[in-house]
Image (cartoon, rainbow, N blue to C red; front, side, top):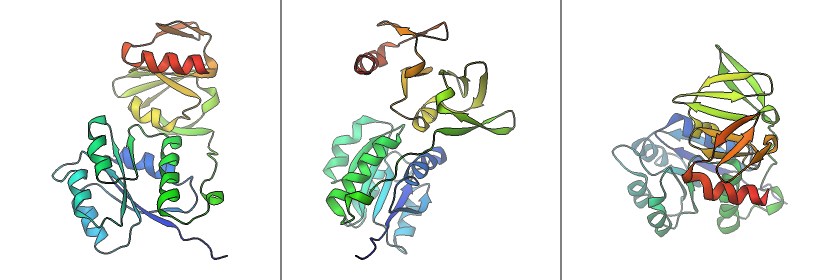
Length: 238
């Protein structure tokens, strides 16, 4: 049997952290090769004129030329997965026959689902080689001028203070400069849950919960109104 070809991907997003998250997720999936990253539509135009691309991860809100306008101008044989922080563009995105529409922060599980949709509809690569299990059980964060390894299992909860995060471990608190939504995209979705714009908690470290708060490490963390419905549904199903 001939060896299946790799799917060549282009990431187009004006935010470097967003590009990094997508690239890291894709690195865990077989037969996917990120050949380039672009920070705006003009860079992507120039790249497409010189290279073959199978699939583009395309941010919608970008300066000068939006992702929607860019998608309308390229060869329809190049497939698109839209990425955005806003739900409002979903209908227009699917009208352009996008493979999928991903809301930020993008988890590994969600990006894997989108890739499998691409494989099923547009690729002949057998399903048995589509994916590689997510093997990382840790992450590195910058703290006190060094990159510190933190096991996901060691985290109790994460607390946000503007551009800084406090990562609460059993007997230690690690402070790192990062946005909580970016951090949420790095964490295993089945292991952690966002309960508030300022809190992410580890499901297996919770002591108890009510409709209004979670108890963890003898601390009461508020479940905000905007997250309550999704949080309670997930906790009841856990």
